Image (tube, rainbow over all chains, first blue to last red; front, side, top):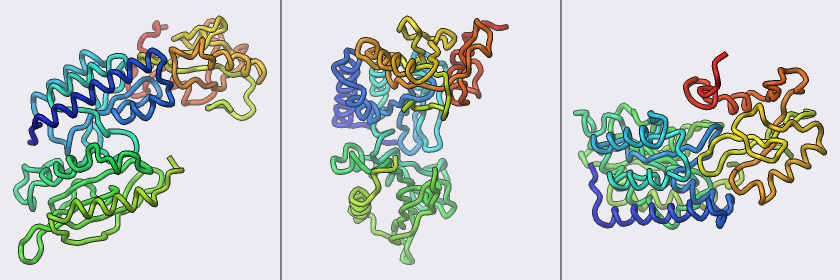
Length: 246
Length: 114
């Protein structure tokens, strides 16, 4: 699985430090809720019916035992002894206290985890097949492309204020276990007749109030072109997507 | 307009979440934020609601809470004096008690057993 380099550590730590200061300013009254709300959403903090909720990213559903133990520790130490693994391969804690969330984020950073871009109008966690990297007949390990997309989309300055949330899924098997056609962008990893890897791209899928099945807009996109292709999709969405129906 | 008002409702209470820990709280007649819905002030009519809501939203009383709003409740005269505040919406009933799928969590878990 992906291992953080020194830049990743620095960025996540800087984010933790930044949010800690934002929470302090909110608690002191220096920040209003209107100013604070988009900041906390960018760090995965929701205010729900009963309490705050913290959503933590588990990139394409891959978790080490060390990280799993840390999540268990967080559940015991900071929450009510349980966590909720979500449909999109994140984990949610339903009872964190805002005043302690910076400490939670620090503990997560210590095991290369975070809550960045798990809520708000941005590109969310990239999801993949639950058997990714383990099933023999996948075209290639979808976690590789998922990681490339994750790095490309994290802190992307052009796509930090999208019309709505944006979800991407990757499948590398003829049996789509990642439900890619129910995502804003769904990518199917395939082989062309010559055996070369290519990516078929679906857009516009989703569930919720108005379910849509994604439409295919490109077949067997060359790997070297995929990020530029995705960037074009994002620019169209960012420009023309509705911002009035959240 | 109250966020979760029932059209034509006569009685309302005021709620919010504690800023530091997210706990659901209710504004009482002494202008304190209480954890127990039974201690919430019940406002009879729009004028009474508006008057207390102004207080609840004022900087003096809103610094420690977030997302202040009013919700409709039943006439307290229809209920026991020890538990006079009954929300009219299912949402607020659930919000006052706790998760319906985990009865061991939320305020319902702390409530004394009958």
